[in-house]
Length: 232
Image 1: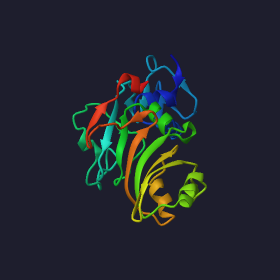
Image 2 (image 1 turned 30 degrees about the horizontal axis):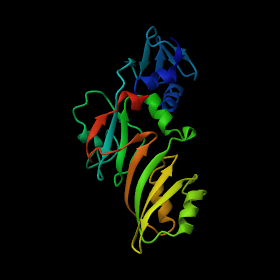
Image 3 (image 1 turned 45 degrees about the vertical axis):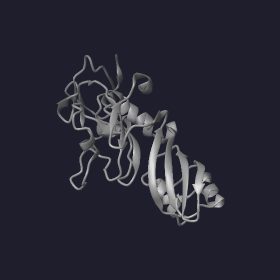
Image 4 (image 1 turned 90 degrees about the horizontal axis):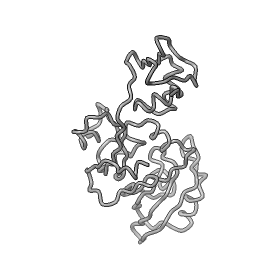
């Protein structure tokens, strides 16, 4: 069955479809011996010979896992400068997995790992508006006015403007405030930067839900394969 090359590459687990388009444009892909740079080119993985960086592209069994990432681990597969990589937490999985999005070193919680580039694209691209829910503890008393400003969005952080979000207040005192925040985008350290703009340091941050997947009672540092119903 013919499919777009970027979709085939994503299905093979190399990268997302968006990244695949970049690789095709850069001349990194060959179809039946000829370099392909035209986006939208179609092929059949069962019949055509597709080479990526000189290696034959093959389909691989799709793997989906959920990890309870601890604080102190870097969300990447390879980084010579990182003290602890998340790969140390699942050393016995033979399949090549990569994280869907990122959680910074000081953030814990739900992290999806897969070799399905197509799924990764659908979960992380802003246009799909997949919800991410976090438990947050910040320093000091968080006023209703500040909560409203963060929820409304429109905050200028570096080179982007924040979108609307939803905040549920759990408890607050003179020294700390506990809340749950729901976002539909996952920019680098966005939550920490939003609260910092109003003079509140994030003391702890934990993702408890991504889309319809929940962290539940999974212990810190442990992982499990997703159930078929969860994958669907």
